[in-house]
Amino acid sequence: MIKKILITFIFVLSMSNNVYSNENCSDFKKFSINYMKCKASSAKNKAVSAGKTFIKDTKEFQNKEWSDEKKKDEWN
Image 1 (cartoon, rainbow, N blue to C red):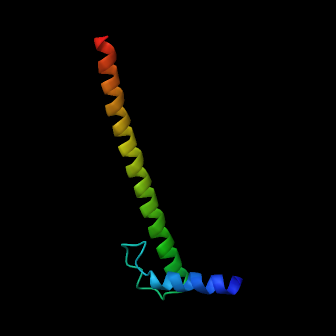
Image 2 (cartoon, helix red, strand yellow):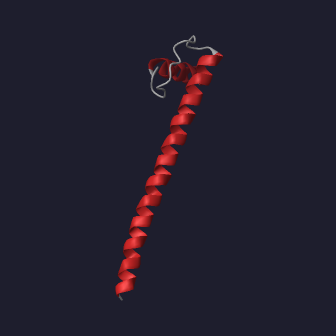
Image 3 (cartoon, helix red, strand yellow):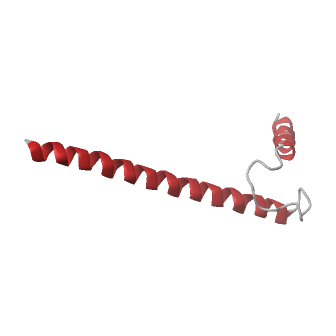
């Protein structure tokens, strides 16, 4: 059972070649350590970038909403 899962996982990885990366990892052989490191670092960079964007958008939304609430309180 574990072998089937492992083979399926490797198959999915080989089919989704450019899922995570905009970087050029094609200089390395597909199942080499350097290729996996390249893909992992590009996935990490995308995740960090998405997290920073999410945090920035959340802060902007909260500032906008809270400033609207402050204006309502000033009128009362």
